[in-house]
Length: 258
Length: 226
Image (cartoon, rainbow over all chains, first blue to last red; front, side):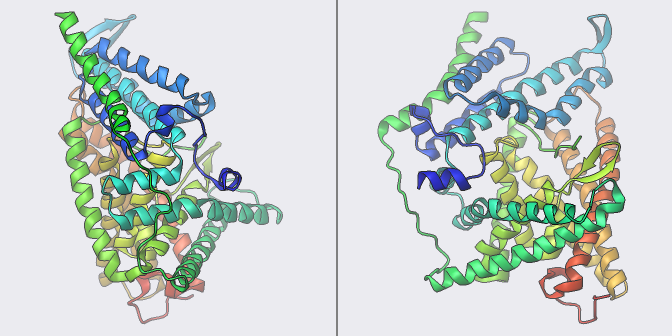
């Protein structure tokens, strides 16, 4: 199983052993979600708290050995909002202050910082979650968190067939290229879109075939789950650790700064 | 350079508004689950699942614009017209959730905001615009594709208006709202052109060979084939 799994898997999960990796997924999702929620709730001007959060995130990244390449890729996703954050001090409301020789909007600077730090912490926490939890476990976790079963089923189909369909897309690209096709500009959109149309027909027909195959194996609208994780009390305690630390950060700094 | 998709990150909109939109989106997804079950029966999971993969794959195709930049499809209108509004909402929502959970692409606490803009506003919005236009435009291929084009075009600025609304409710007060509205709707009115062209080309390709698979064409008796 392990070998096949690693061959066909999508996403960014990497197998390792530590208690964070082995935390049952529903607890881990809830734990990461509430940590990020506490970070989002912390006002941006609470500088010390955010730096402490950043330290926690960095130690989690190092401890779970999240590859640097992945971190860089996730940061690129943020770019449109980083630009927005940089424009805020320039186009923001008055009053203006001198900031390294520039007349910048003070509320704009704070807002820009607020967006940058929270977005970065959020994306890094998502990265920690997805790189420490196998996709199938994520689905089991969502189901345990009372996500609608049908939605989880649709997600499981998406995860299962992403590789198949994207490989199909690659084969189409190879077929186009071997006929000397090169996408240079909008003139070539017609060809690309026709590939897309063909991909839709193939995906739809695949969906129908899969459905038939499932019916012939007794599918009634429910998917059986093959693994049942048993979560101990220790797991629940471990799971509350992350949000508790975040709350503790706020409390300690507020006392300390008084 | 490929223009990345606009997924609102964590902390861009404050926590109460993020949670509010999580609830609103959950309600619409619940409606979509019910609607899709009526439409597709127990076929929902495999078909909406494969449609989600298809939308995800379509978003990966780079459409070159000029000078090395390229754009890609958002896919709300495409999903709605190809597989119907409810299954479309489910497909686009699942793409967003899987992207956030499996690929760490998109904030967890911002999930409701993103699902609302891209899956509910863009997909359902495009569907109702499409249905309305289908009634008033000529019942032939040109009319059908024009309705598709306008619905796909408008779905993009509508999404941007949703973003501006969220920003008004829970964004920073450090910038005046009219500036955000003008910038967002302005940029997205341009992006919408690409969305409209790609959606029309894709749907017309499917129409030519398998009209029966296009949900939006399922009630038209006239020939939509060239």
